[in-house]
Length: 118
Image (cartoon, rainbow, N blue to C red; front, side, top):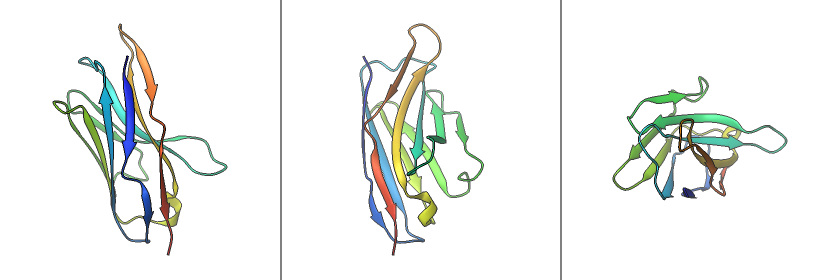
């Protein structure tokens, strides 16, 4: 059973940076995809970035120039470095782990709030 716990959210001024962390417990297995999604008030949850256990990354077009996803497989950690933040980045950021082949899973963390405001 995979479980995810996010940390690192908070209040930051426009133009600032934050680094989110996601700690995974349980067996992730080769071929799993870990990622970050976000949900702003009144909006649907959207993709930020994903990374496979093999290191392949994927980003939402609007964020790929400012956000960087990375992972430490040995520590079962996933990180999201966010730079040049704007108020439009304000949202709850969720860590996700999924695997589409047996054993399949699709697990979400509880989320961490990121607020960008002066």
